[in-house]
Image (cartoon, rainbow, N blue to C red):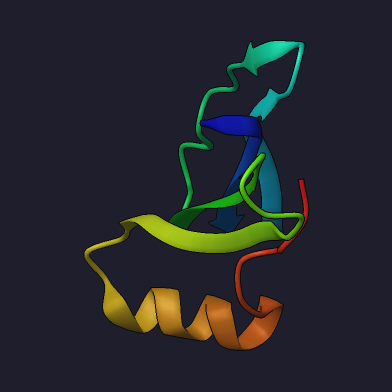
Length: 85
């Protein structure tokens, strides 16, 4: 069972990475509308359980534009999904 599970959505736009919806332990979810010009979306997560003192951290892509060259160019310019809440 999770002791703490938090996450943040990140959206890659022509302006760079923009923070989206979040979940903060003890505070619940804060929903934010996705930017209309997003190129790619990902979610960064942190999971802490009682079974291990380690905090598991990972990010995964959740949405990508149907224009692969646009996504690759933006990733080259702004880098991968931010690994922070």
